[in-house]
Length: 244
Image (cartoon, rainbow, N blue to C red; front, side):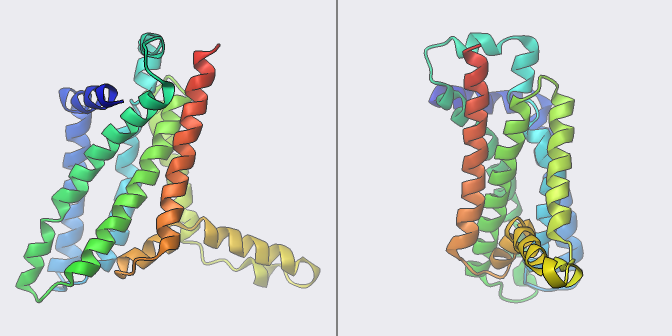
């Protein structure tokens, strides 16, 4: 796994992908910081974290689109799968490489914290919790994007499908519909069930605790379990292709 990790991490910076992701992400995150924090001269980064989460929706598909699609299209995936290494090591190596690039981008935005001292005393502990939530959200998005890359040989399709799913999840998170009020009477139980489902899959609801500086077990488990699910699904997809 270590060899795969190093290989993939080098590939990000031997090609424009890593630089494009980092430059676009940091640029738009800086814009958010200027408008939200510097413009209002406030030290709370709650709104900043929520908006940077939306930036992830657009930039992480670029980070993950090549993970498996590129090798599948160029047929080099067969050489990798016949090497003396487990499929799980291949998947985890690629996943950790993409996560490392993500971490570099998130860590770069932490340079904004000292700037806030110009406007007051930032709550460092709460801000670090917010950054943890932002990173965990990104880890989930990376795992989902990697899975989409494993099911197609087209990087464009992998990126667009990942973007579509992430956008749908983000929009569902922002819906204010109350199905329990719409489906009244005998269908009230169905409406209540739909309300619970929307709340459960709500990304914003899980990220919200972190943006307030509150560290709870539930949102941590939520993001990590979903990331683990898509890593597992990716392993199953690659194993199935390996034994065909």
